[in-house]
Length: 496
Image (cartoon, rainbow, N blue to C red):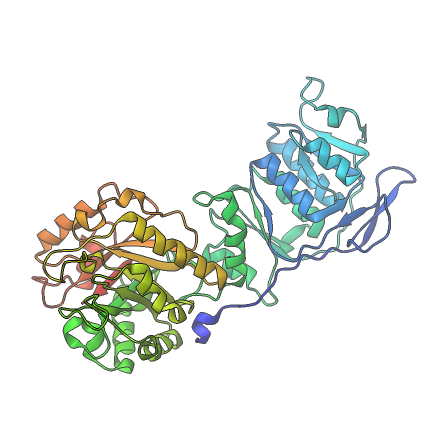
């Protein structure tokens, strides 16, 4: 594994509280400190040992942040539902100055106030109209809280909507310190490149996820935060292959020129060729362009072979030098499976040792998935969604279990029948970036027709790939034509 792909394995995120004294009213004082500090009627901050997840709507996210970061607080700032603008800003500022939680009135508030041991409240928002809950009305009120300086602990907060989740962000700042040390980043995914770059400062910074992330189930947020803070980075940086980068790949098998560009030269020359080709695209697009290998790991064969599956499986250790050299050079690798009569999962498991590398993804080629009484080249093969999903679930678990970055999971298709029930294929596994790779060859008009047909009813979560054939295309698209004429611009382009 190279420095380009190592990232920060083994890092743990720790949020640490500080100690400071402050008062609410004459004669009343309490402590802000760690769970080990004394003072039963004081504010105490809990130091988590990993990323904090404060998911849900604005009220729920504020409650979750309070539960994760505060052990106790005798005073709380409570905001009425629907409070916006200057009133909301004043409430959050007061909470952060006083080092206490900022919560929204609503379901679960009473239980949280009881847990905190809260006796006094500062209320902000409409008053006297019956909108305050019993949990708020039954507690003593104070007009204000004293300003103070809370010990600061740098932290990165990521949220899809900082305005909507202002109360939760204020609660984080109250526990860990206000001001510039709390970086608030707007992002729909806690694994986005700017977030990963921010938390991997020197020293690493804690990560707090506030609110739900579009496209990620709430149950997936903890895993996404763990990936953001712990997974080795991909070639080019970050832990998500797309949309932060595009990949340009040599396709083929080592030492076999007839199967594609990858086998037309030795390993060192293949790395250099992939890098040069990627640079041609870098001059044409704004995203980072990463060179790649798509290595045919199992090759459909006209002979049955000893196992009778009409597929020749490369020894993983034979491919190891190519995988290792690629990682050292910042080249991504996709292992391509042509299973013949075998099933995709059985073949994928043969390459577990390679797939546990952070810069290695997987491709399934249904063209070469044939029935028990068929041979390659008798017809174009296909695969059912259940088999694809079985592989995807296994690969996602492997990625999760080894704290890896998101993997490219490619499905080759140039006929609709190759993925006949494509609408049932899982695209919701957060560990995988699903790519449908359109790899038909022919004239530009024919390739464009296939490109358009494959896009029909394609799920939004799927990224598109394109293949340029050096010999079979008439003519072969140049990099300029691939970017200019293929719409949308493919995220993964391979050369055969």
